[in-house]
Each structure stands twice: as C-alpha cells, then as structure tokens.
Amino acid sequence: MEASDTLDRQSESELYFPPESIQQNANAQEYDKLHAFSVQDPEAYWGERAEEFSWYKKWDKVLDDSNKPFFKWFVGGKVNIVHNALDRHLTTYHRNKIALIWEGEPGDTRTFSYFALHREVSKFSNVLRSMGVKKGDIVTIYLPRIPEQVIAMLACAKIGAIHSVVYGGFSVEALAERIQDAQSKVLITADGGWLRGKIVELKMIADEAIARQGTIEHVIVVKRTGQEIYMEAGRDYWFEDLINLPVANGLNAPTEVMDAEDPLFILYTSGTTGRPKGILHTHGGYMVYTATTLKNVFDIKDEDRWWCAADPGWITGHSYIVYAPLLVGATSFMYEGAPNYPYPNRWWRMIENYGISILYTAPTAIRGLMRFGDSWVKRHDLSSLRLLGSVGEPINPEAWKWYHTVVGGERCPIMDTWWQTETGGFMISPLPITPLKPGSATKPFFGIDADVVDEEGNPVKAGEEGYLVIKKPWPGMLRTIYGDPDRYKEQYWSKYGNMYQAGDSARKDEDGYIWVIGRIDDVIKVSGYRLGTAEVESALVSHNAVSEAAAIGLPHELKGNAIHAYVILKAGQERTEGLEEELRNHVGHEMGPIAKPDQITIVDSLPKTRSGKIMRRLLKARAMGLPEGDISTLEQ
Ligand code: WTA
Image (tube, protein in one colour):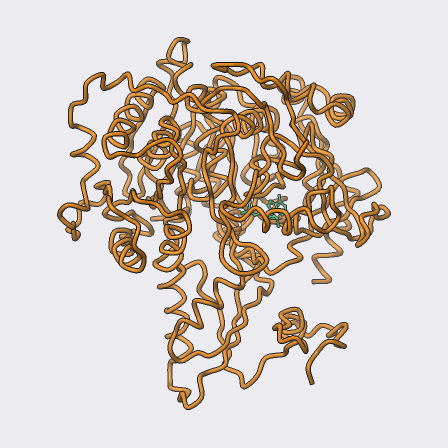
C-alpha cells in the first residue's frame, strides 16, 4: 500500500506533454474556456452537439429537470441510434468504408463495410420482428466476442427492442437472474466461443439457466465452433437458418422511430447490496454523449483504426466497440480471444497486421502482458499507434510507464478514462492536448462538473481524500434502474440530494487533476471486471455445505483486486478434504470464472455489527494487517 502511495504522490509532479504533432491535429483544440462554458450552460453545449446527428424530429427542450433526479434529455426529439450508427452512412462515402474488422482466436477473420454491417443488421432485425419481438421488449444476448454480438445488439435497437447483454464469461446463475429480472422471451446465444484454445460452453450454460426460470420461449443459436450441441425442437433455432430465410423487403427493414428518451438497453451491474441492477440507457442522450466523448478523447479521424479491447458484454464494449465508433464513422477492430494466445505477442502482432492506430484497454491487461517482458512487444512494428487508452481501475504508474515507453514508443499519450456503467461514457479523462500525470484521469470532460467532497458535500482541500461526485446531469447518464426507480434515487442521489454519487473515493491535486482511488462500497474490481460481494456470497451460500459467507477484495498485483471469501459451514457439515476447492468451483459454475475467489477460508464466526451486518471492512483490515479502525458497532 505504502509503496504505491509514494509512487502516486511522486507522479503528481511529473508531467508528460503529448507530442506537438498530436496536439496540433487534435479534434479538441481547447480545454479551459470550452469546459467552463460547457458546465455553465450545458444545454447550449449539448444542444450544439446534438445538431451533429440526424433526427427524425428535433427536440423541444435539451434538458428537462422538472422531476429530479429523473432527468430527461432532448425531450420531444425523435431519433434512433441505429439510424445514426448505420443508415445515414449509406448515403455518404462511408458506405464502402470498413466498419468492423474481426479476428477470431483460431485466426479466422471477417470484415464488414458499413454497407455490409447494415445489411446483416437489417436481415437479423427482420428475423426478430418475425419472431414477434416488438418495440419495448427486452431481448437477452449471451454471446462470445464475435460480429454477431454487435449485429444482434444493433438489430434490437433498430426495431426498438431493448437489449440486455450478459457477458459471455458469466455463468448459470448470473445469466438466469438477469433473464428473470428482464423477463426476456428471446435469448440469443452460440454453440460456444473460443478462449485460450478451448470452447466456452455457452449453450450448455444457457440451457441450464433457462431451466431455472420460466420466461424464455425462443433461443437463437449462432454457429461459432461447429461442435455438437443440444437443440430443443420448437424452442431453439440456428441463427444462420433464420437469417437466410427470404423476407419481403429484406434489406430495407425499417428503422423504428423512437422518442429520444425511449430505452436503448439495460446492462446489469453490481451495486452496493443485493442483486445486480439493470442500468437503463436511452437512444438520444446516450448517442450524443458516447459519440462526442469518443471523437474528442480518442481523436477519431477517418483514417484511424480503433481497437477497444473490451468485451461488448460490459459498458466499455457497448459504448466504445458498438455504438460510438459507428456513430462517428470509424473503422473498428475486434478480437475474440485471450491476449496471450497462442503466444504473448498476439496483441502486438494484430496491431502490426491491421495497422491499429489507437488501442484502448484495461490496466490489468497491460500488467498481464508486461509480465512477459519487452521482447514480445519489440518483435513487432507498432509504429501505427498514435494514442493509447486505459479504463476500469486506477492505472499504477509502473504499468503506465511501461505502456507509454514499450508499447507507445514514448510518442503516444495515454488517455486514462474514468467512467462507469451508469455514466454511459467517459467522464474524467485527458484530451490529446492535456499534459498527463501517470495514474490520474486528469480533468472532467466537457459538460461534466465533477468534484471531490466530504461527508457533508463540501469540496475537500487539494490533496485530501473525499467522495467523487458529479454536480450536474449529463446526456449519457443512466435514467433509472430497470424496474426499481426508488433504488436509483437511493443509490445515486440520496446522500447529497442534488449531486450524483459515484461510489468512488478520489482526491484532487493543486492543479485540479483528479486521482481516483477506488470503490468505497461493496463493489470489487477484479481484473477490471465489476463484481459485487453480494453475488459471490449468494453463490457460496447456494452450496449445500455453506450457511454463511463474506467476500472481500484484497490487492493483487495483476488483477488489481482478488476475491477472498470466508465461509461458515452448516451445522454438522464435515470439513472434508478439498471442500475449499469445491466451493471455488461452485462459484465459477454459478457466477463465472472471473468471480472465483482466490482463497476461501472456513471460519466459525464472522465479525458483525449489533444489527447483524457483516463487517467486511474489518475482515479486510485484518487480512491486510491494517489497524481495525472504529469497532464500536462490533458485536463482541
Ligand atoms: C472504476 C467501467 C480509476 C471506478 C467503465 C468506477 C476507474 C468503476 C477508471 C466503474 C479509471 C473505471 N481510473 N478507476 N480510469 N475507470 N474505474 O461500471 O471504481 O464496470 O466506479 O465501468 O470502475 O466500473 P464499470
């Protein structure tokens, strides 16, 4: 802890200036004045941005804040995000530009022009319509990182259906719970996906999840691996069969006209307590916000090849693989598999092969690849790279410097973007003209009024730790938690009344640079993935040997945090040999491999408050050998 803290503080005075050539050509040429204007008059700033899109009908009002915190943006406007992401490119030179280059883990490749992607999306939207999917229905998507994932999401949005994407690394219970909450009737999955040379058994997991809940009527299965799988007659259909059925008017599938505030998707994420919550985003505001942030922060130019190495199953992929790049007419690259398969040069080889100019990834991936040494990177010509990006957790200065020096050849500034599933897009981030400090996400984006405050909501002094808040609404913000508006209010707006509470702690330095420290709630970031202690605990308790469980995150060199769990066994349950391993595997089966605790400790009791709440903070302090802090509420 202490060593990294010293490093952090050291880098506060270290400044890296983006090369002149990058600054001069940057899409954003000015920060201070424009930021000041944009937070003073957000309606003017966002209204201007919204003009850059094609609307079926223009909005009557940019922001409606009459029912706080249920803000509405571009009220009265008619639009569809897919109309802007695909349809409108067909009448420009983008029609034949490459929208998506994809490489599978086994090495197979596919490429889609804007025309071709539009064609596939149109075909699949016909399929969905013919299955009875209508505007407002929620379709669950559970796919590997293959082009059909993008196609399925866009096809839903095109017909006004709401997609709920479940990350392909999640497992049975995580999937069942999300389908149940959304009451989806249609599930889109695959016969498997490739990861580290092995098949991820998505269909088998899906079958088990469907058996646990009762809403799914149709399953559409993409053939990815070609392995034999179980197909239930009358319920399961092959994607390839459906998409090739002729439909009258086939390629001219109409794009549904939506209200700007109509839901585009829900994406489940972990919160402070209990079940994952469905974060809801809309067509209009999310469209304007994601495109504006991508264009300014990553400086997208027509000739760029953009690679966001996330998974579309998380918000980073939703915003910056699927929607924003298409909205700005970019060429994206997408890769199916593991970064070090079959060798640790896989990513670098692809950057060289495809001439990637911007790479956006997570600190955990950088640390993971750094561990294999510089020589794997140096085998390849990475001179096509111009900008780098980081997201998901604070980047430690050591990883930052390696990324900057070895990967970026000291010429590529690193855009360290702080944001959340809830925010829709980048909130605090450098621009390619911003002097950088390794480990700081620097300053708020245009229109974003961010601050660090104390318990009472007053700004803390420079250098002091406090709570990260956003003081004004922005177009990309979540609108609610699906089916639970009270929880939305309580979770994000209750503490200070009129400020969005992010759930992170942070500090601001003398130069106004923001340093995000980490979560202050029961969310654990494992390898950049967002998990809740509650989900891991309920997976443990669902095992018949366990009566109670507590999960915490402890610092981990590669993953950022690793899950440690403490369990109390049921009365009469033997501590059998290998039980810990069995419990770990059980969590993997229920939640997914990423949620597997690194360590499980069987205990006789757990520290609790007098009201019966597990004191995870205390468990963490004890595990790390830190002072126990205030234990006055501890039941002795
Ligand atoms: C953390 C991911 C430090 C933070 C886009 C936040 C970061 C949570 C950064 C949201 C960053 C994300 N520096 N911390 N650049 N980016 N975080 O919803 O704790 O999966 O609250 O969204 O990730 O995670 P989520």
